[in-house]
Length: 74
Length: 338
Image (cartoon, rainbow over all chains, first blue to last red):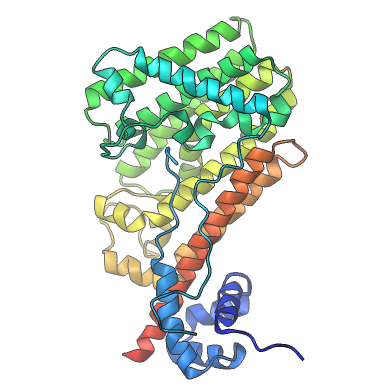
């Protein structure tokens, strides 16, 4: 029996699909916020609480300042 | 999922990759020799140029009080190029290999310093301009010691110097001339900026009598330069908008009926377009495609270090892409909470 996915595995699935799956990417980009929430609930088996936590987690990823740009030094 | 302060998303930051320098003892010894030679060059400079050359800000183009920590602290594509293609050029004797690396370092660093002068970031500009001239003269002197006047190297050198000047001119023109910025402008500016690094490859292939390597390596460098320029423009677009620096990415973001940068769109208008189109995400995907082409250009060549450098760049781009997508999704979901 397949093990249930952890929350971060689901989150990674969302991000991977947003990069590579045109259908998912189009929905995320063009659908209304409630439609996006429905997609996350149904397709990725996330609970309503997990979606709330997801917002915080996405904000963390977006704010993470560990990625530098090209620099002559470094 | 947790709401604690500790993130549960395990992105591994991998800064300062060192995979480009071969482990082979001779390669390490030659690189150490380059470090020593450049330090000796700096120490031999007259004041106040020596102080400029010893400061990190001269190379960085930003105010920085810290001291320059030597050639080993530079981005490896500037001075480490011969080692990135070590397997292909290791057949050169020590003196020729190190002299090409040294000449290339002076020439490339001269172009970096010139970039900062053109961007208005050099301070104090007079001293930095003089440092540029000294670097350039040292580079030419070293190349002259290697290649006779009749050598095919000089034809490539002239063409690359011309491309460098044209590239910088294109960037200035696109930035200030209140005209549409096209992909061709981005490509020409990027190819111009990388041209001084290609000079080192021209010297290596000429000295090694291995001309067939020149085109693939040059193409790989051109592609990574375009990727790098576009990545920077995506990352800096808000700052560029504030400073009135027209870029290709800002042109992509601009409203449909917006022909040129005669009147700038408002920041909020650009933010809205980016939210609707995910233009940053689309452009970051383009960056990855340019990097893929850079990798393809050197297919079949023995260049472990260079491949590692491109792969690292791809990984870095993917992290930018992840962050951009996460930001868009978070913004959309946040609207549900309001």
